[in-house]
Image: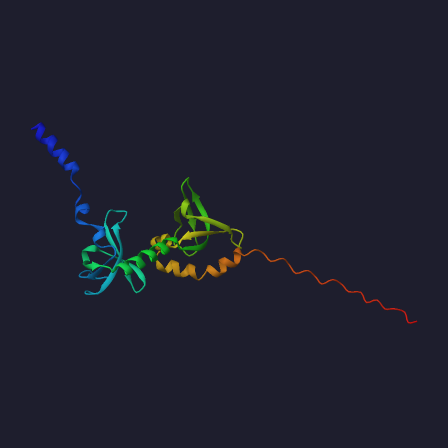
Length: 201
């Protein structure tokens, strides 16, 4: 009996989870899919799946490209139609790489800091957000003398705060950029000219 229990325990420990066996991200990413369930999208709608994986809670997800925006979808509601054409797949990969490198300037206050992360508060966010220090570049001081200007990854802000936060920040970029421009020296006052009158001979 003891031998049987030991064998059963080792077999159970080695067995993969249901999620791991049921979901293969590579069969969704860079594939064309059709909506077959759920309420988020119209049934029969077709889209490109540009990314797939497991979220922080171990739940499978797919990222669909819909009208130029990325939208989350449950793989259970999708039917895979086939892989994207090679040229289209290469373009999507290039666009995703560019998106990962995109940054926005954010004015805010440092609320807390650890060895690896910093907690930044921005007036347009409902709460302060943690950013790994590797993602944060300090650009200088805000003109109000209290805040700082940071360069933060766009994808991280979108993931944490949503697309509306991106739109709001984009409207502030020109103002932030002006704050970072070097101060122009004040123009010098023109030199005084003295009129010398010669005596008549």
